[in-house]
Length: 241
Image (cartoon, rainbow, N blue to C red; front, top):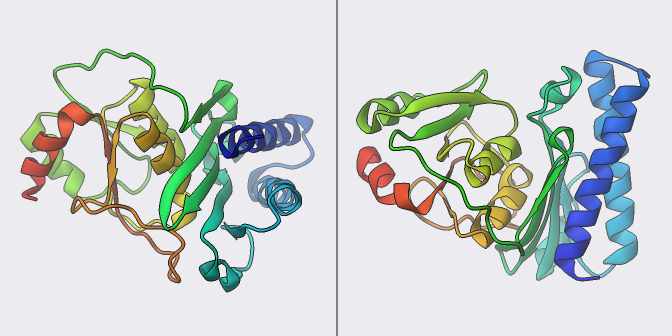
């Protein structure tokens, strides 16, 4: 099984586990979220340790094993991105599985289980029509203040959405055109979305234009820009970068 096939299979299967758990009525609210995080993490960690035992691993739901820093290949996972949205039975939550090779998000899959989708870095982007007025994907609860500047300078529409993975994939799927984030993220929040976006020909960088670098000792990776290529120049001009 290729790394891309494995990433997609693990993300899809973890998503099915999460959907089954939520639909079972076992728990609700924060308790449901806690159980779901632990369940998906246990599956992904055990599967990767069994199937890729020589690789490193970084997960949001696992104590960081810094031996990963000695590895060229490191899997970076977020077992449930958007726990709040998941617990509220919304569709905008995701499962992230990525493989960093020498610090680059080389392989990735993002499952959107409630939408019955898995997007992967080794497949072409779907053909979409982009509107003249761009749509900026923003957090439902914490939109970055810079988005107001982009909205004004680009004449954009703001589209609130849940998890980071859901927002990033919305750009690829044509449900939005720009995902701009400066509110603080960790490597597991964006490694898989960046891998998928880059693999599908989207722009996926830090806000200043530098590449996103993974498997660093500090897990914080605070800002991100994912957008359709035709919007990159105008976004950077609007930001003054």
